[in-house]
Length: 241
Image (cartoon, rainbow, N blue to C red; front, side, top):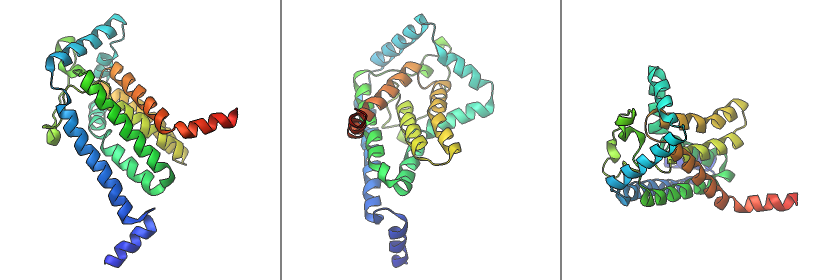
């Protein structure tokens, strides 16, 4: 049995079981530390609600409070609201974790930069939570927002005021861009190219993020990409010069 497991690791894993174990330890260790730090980073409800009101004020003055429209669209369809809720709960960790595993096994040469891109973007997002705690739309029912939110198993470590930037948006952009580039079948390329847009809609339709949070999350992903991929980008620029 042991020999069969070892042989399977050599056959299917790029660097064997030991390296897979290291990658899993890095990922789950990061998730644990991230959740704890995220939960204690800022528990200032007054500042969070003040910042949330600032976001609402900005979007209202710009005639761009689109989140209410998205909530109404989702509310008219049980299937759509259920899909949006599932996406909110699973897009950040479940989908990201499975994407990391798939890239590790099937496109190993792309794995390390992909992993580092996600890790750096989430660290940058954590900095945003510390300096700008922001209450999500669902905490402003007087403006017409609705949302049912339960923290579940991570309730003790979760920060309910971590809306700005949206790491759901950042992670969806990172996963979508990466998989759209490395998948071979056109149908999968199309699916992953559209994945960020669907996630952006879902987090607004469920009342968990403003579109400004999404914009900030996308900017975080872009900044992280410029850091992680600076060498390939520099070589490409030099090759075109």
